[in-house]
Length: 249
Image (cartoon, rainbow, N blue to C red; front, side):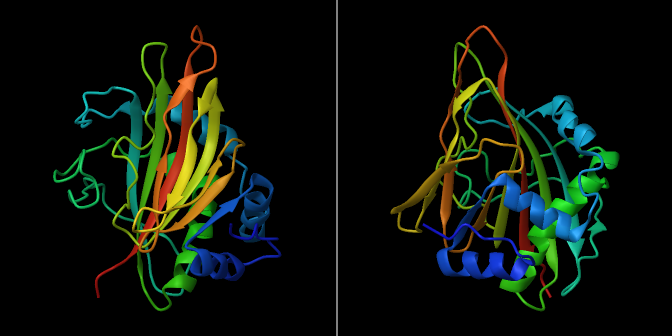
C-alpha cells in the first residue's frame, strides 16, 4: 500500500508517491495541511462550497435508467509550470465508449458549476493542489482540467452507484477525488486495480477532505454502491472529482 504522505509540503512528495504506486490515499488532515500550504484561508468559503452540492441537477444521461446521480461540471486550464488557472467556456463532457461503456460515446451537457463556487477559495485551492501533482508528473505540459460535482443518492428501494460504469479509467492523465460529505450511508469503498484487473488496494473516503489521487494512465478505479444506514432518512455521498490531462500542443 502507498505511503501516507507526511505532507511537509509541496506536491513533489505526492507526485513521487503517485509515480511509485500509481495511486495514493490521503487522510483529511494531510489534505488540509497541503491546502493550507497553498493558501492560508483556503476554507474561507467551505460552508457555501459544501452546501452547493444541495443544488446539483439530476444526471439524465444514465443508460441504466437510474436517477440516483446529480452533478454539475466545469472546464478549466492552466499553462505549463504555473498554478495560474483559467476558466474555459462551458462545454459538454465527452468520454469514448473505450472508457465509459455505460454512458460514453455521446456529448453530455451538464449544468455548470456555480461561478461563485468555481472561483471560490476552496475549489480553486483544491484544483491547484491536484495541478501541482499533475505538473510534476508531466513536466512542461499545459493542463486541461475538468471539475465534477457529484451527489450519489441511496434510497430504501435501490442502492446508489458512485461508478455505475464499473471499474474503469477516465481517459485522462491524473484524477483527484475528494470527499465533501457522507450522510446516512454505508459502503462507498474506493477500489484500485492494475490495468489487467488485479486488485491493488481499497479504502473508504469518510471524512470531509479525505482524498484519493490516481494515475489514470496506469491504474483503474471503482467505488462500491452505497445503501442507507437508516432507510427512513435521506442518504447521499457528495464528492468532488477533478481530472487533469495534457493539452494538445
